[in-house]
Amino acid sequence: MLDKISYRAQLLLIIFFTSTVSVAQTSEQKALEAKRERLQKEIQEINRLLFAEKKEKGTVLDQMEALDKKINVRQELIRVTNQQSNLLNRQINVNIRSISKLREDLKILKTDYAELIQKSYQNKSQNNRLMFLLSSENFYQAFKRLQYMEQYAKHRKKQGEDIIKKTEDLAVLNRDLVEQRKTKEKLLVENKRVKNELSAEIASQKTLLRSIQQNETKYTSAIAKKQKEARKIDREIERLIKSAIVKTNKKAGKSSSTKFVLTPEAKLVATNFSSNKGKLIWPVEKGVKSQGYGVYSDKLYPGIKHRNNGVTIATDKGSKARAIFEGEVIAILSVPGGSRGVQIKHGNYISTYYNLSNVYVKKGDKVAVKEALGDIYTNRFDGTTKLKFYLYQDSNRLNPEDWIYQL
Image (cartoon, rainbow, N blue to C red; front, top):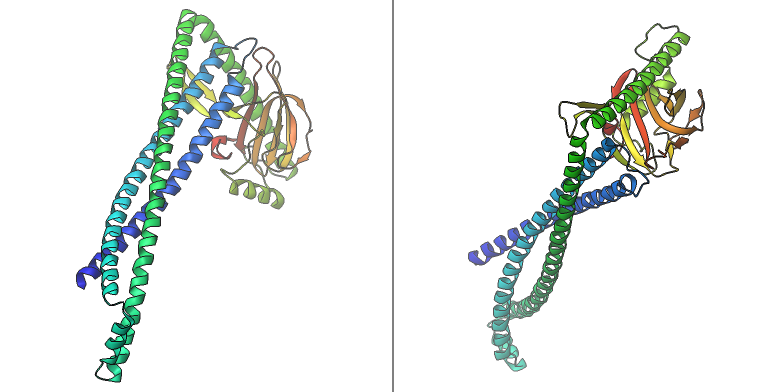
């Protein structure tokens, strides 16, 4: 009796552990699948926005950055797909063990059930059951024998139901196993295709590197020009922010030139903005980050450093920049020899949208979240449409990647 109880306890623990592991792995698998789909979509967007057929290919620097971006995303996709495959392997092994255990349980149940049927057949005569009751020494014994007969019948029925349930569970696990193996095979095929594409992209990058090495002067000249343009934009953005701080504080009778003096209303806007860190909308309806925030080494000449004080987002031709949060327009940028831009104040946070061909708002306008601010400029030489987006708190630079959802 104790052995049976121990066996049942072990069986319950195995079932509980298996189901818990299964739920956890299913949840992890869904998360990985969602990430894999997001990476696939990002590669499609990179191909569409940065590698579409153009009349001209643009500067070698742009080509290099675009290839590097795609290679990094492709490598991440391979890593996530490998994680999915490994997780499926674990799930398949769990299912194999569960199937083996269910088959063993089913075999025991069928043996027990066969014995019950045999005993039942031997005692199936109504007369035998009646004689069994009538041969009782007293009423109490007859009552207990009747209870026993009812329990025996229930036990027999329960054994039959258990066999049906175990058989159904076994069929479900077998179907799951078949589907999991199919999914794993698809992932392996997908991974092989992605690796081949990655190899081709790395080869293209090497070819581009060789062409750059043959004309180093042209490449370094392109870098210097780009860095000069970026510094000009950065200086103008920071000049306008400092000017806005001084003017705002002067109205409030304060002399600080580094931080905004906030009214109660502005404090509320700033608090709401801050509480949405990591959840703010993109400054374009759809697009892909073509260049991130910060300082990074040049791919060909590591000694050369590139700095981006914001992020660059590639989008479709005809796209519009949109406000990431409610606020007030404090400046319209117009950089000599460059494009136009809009600066919006959200309490003491300032978002800047640069590289616009047309601007829809003016200084002093109140704007709502998602409100269109202007048309994003499309480069007539290479056909790319890119928005440069910057974020500040007072006069301090912030990394937009920390604030915009999944940027």
